[in-house]
Amino acid sequence: STQSRSSAASDVYKRQTYLSHEIGKRKPDVETFEWVCKDAGINPSETLFIDDSPQHIEGAKKIGLKTHWLKEGDLLDLF
Image (cartoon, rainbow, N blue to C red; front, side, top):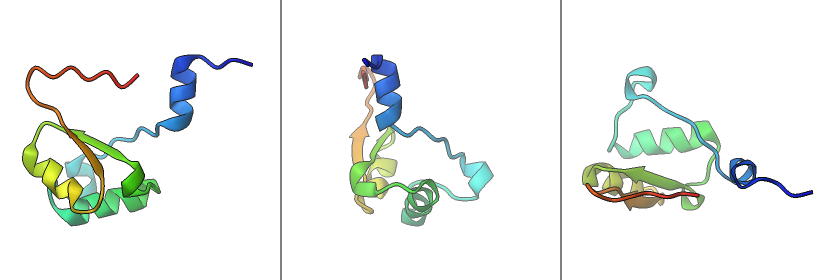
């Protein structure tokens, strides 16, 4: 049986949103990234963090997250 591209992607990618005001933690604190990874049950070395703030990217890198700095004018095509 053939899966659609979006269905196959949902099997691979885990999407979850964490809002600072709800979890009481803020980027770029290393503890924030560690807490989110633990709560989501994800391995930082297998996780891509995308942000438009270089400070947030640096915080994410400190715990081993793979990162992409989204700069003005960048197009991001994940699928």
